[in-house]
Length: 197
Image 1 (cartoon, rainbow, N blue to C red):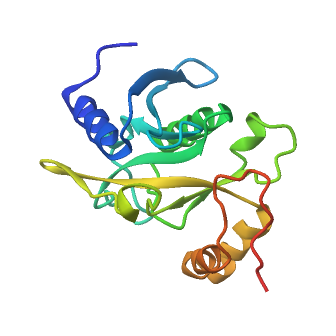
Image 2 (cartoon, rainbow, N blue to C red):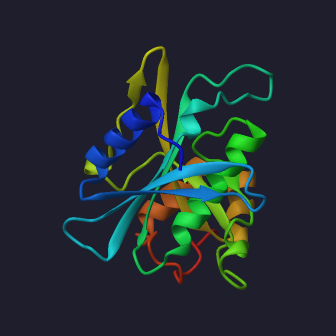
């Protein structure tokens, strides 16, 4: 792993402050070994069965909107998962590498398809949904300013194909309202599909 840039050191320090706990950083490579992303993990101080996961370095890349403009913010990813489900770190790393390679803008409400198929045989929920982070800091993950850049985080959660299609048709607000109303446990990889009718 090459020495981190000053930018990445600030991102890592900020994530560790939000997550709490003792951080561990590892480098994850794509299949070809041509691209990499550093991943920070912290076991939860209250419940060590839960791990917080954060990317370090996605925000060094400018993302481009459909109109060809640079996205107004830089992006990093985060997730909360059961510590026993080690594939989650790989899945978030894969989403990060996908974003870095395509440079396509991502915002809350986007889904990245079929990420878990590489890590779980026949996953019930193959896709990753990107949401405004809600698991830490009393549901608030403040923006990090590293002038002239602004960095915001997107939380990764797993979703069913039916949920992805619902979001495509009815929008992310309706989907997230149902998540809250139905008290869905996003840490449960065996959870039932959100009631969509």
